[in-house]
Length: 69
Image: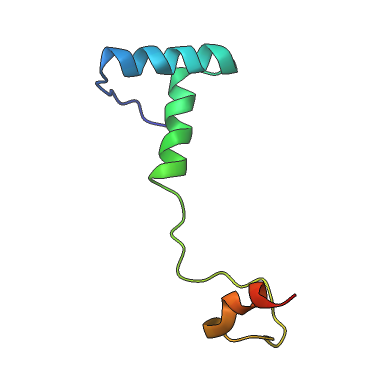
């Protein structure tokens, strides 16, 4: 791990310190996790399929399910 410095407005640093105190974590740990979640998150490359069966409806009539009694 390499050390770096970040300049933050006082209110942001105060909020980070408060969040760290509440969670029992370090400010650096919170910043690392935030960077992982926001900047380094995997990019989704399109639709995610969880169904491998034959579709019962086309995407065009997707909302028609709400019309059925």
